Image 1 (cartoon, helix red, strand yellow):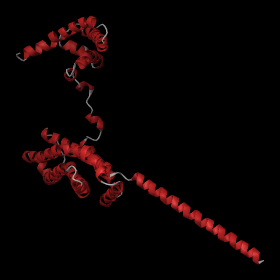
Image 2: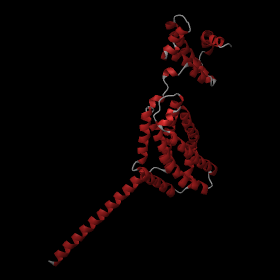
Image 3: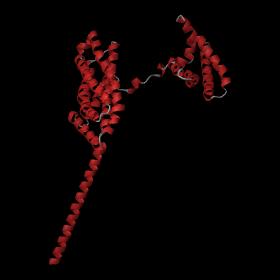
Image 4: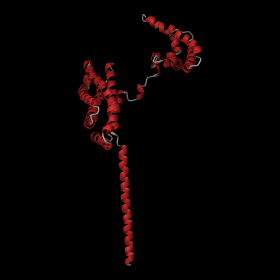
Length: 336
């Protein structure tokens, strides 16, 4: 009876021990997995600062749009401009630049690396805050109603753009890449976590993305959110643009005939039959495709270096007609 009781007790203790060990192992595994996941999700200090530069760059584009509207006397509501200046103050100057000033710049000075650059960047931080003060003060509906005040508002925005375009470019390509080399691996990872905590503390969880959403809303109000608006239209790419490209070197000039021939089919109104009719060339609907085919075929042969003497003849004729029909009248018309 006693032996049976002891045996049952041993089995119970053994089972309990196995259960406790399994629970401990499971907890340890889960803890390690969570720690690994957290480390993988932490953004490195340079990456964190660079993506914040993306926010700054988008605000500079908003400032550029505001300047364009003021210069062209178009309507500009004050709210988008005031909101943009507020983001500059709260997110860029009071948070992003403070991180650089508190965590990066002192370490570069201590390591005696890029000290001259750091000093210039610090001076620009101070100058930028003064320009933002002026912009925030003038970004009102009353200012935008007065022509003189509108011009006063343009000046600090222009200076801000002019200073911060090279400022952020120099940090992204020189300062931030050098940062890893002046701190230990542990310190580097620790700073990434500190930056994330500070960001969440000031702007809430996923604070960066909330700021990005605020910027996107301003862009929508000004009609510049859609990237397609900045893409040049085909009809805006003129023969003058192609001529500038083709003048770069001999290889470009050889490809110029090929590109001109293709344009006569792609942009018939601007470069093909429509242009032929405008400058008085007879039978434009026939001659334009014919000349286009000659330019494509002869241009391609010229590029690859086949039968160059043969193709030179029609291309010389092509150039001569172009000079007589377009370039010469323009020169004479301008008094040359």
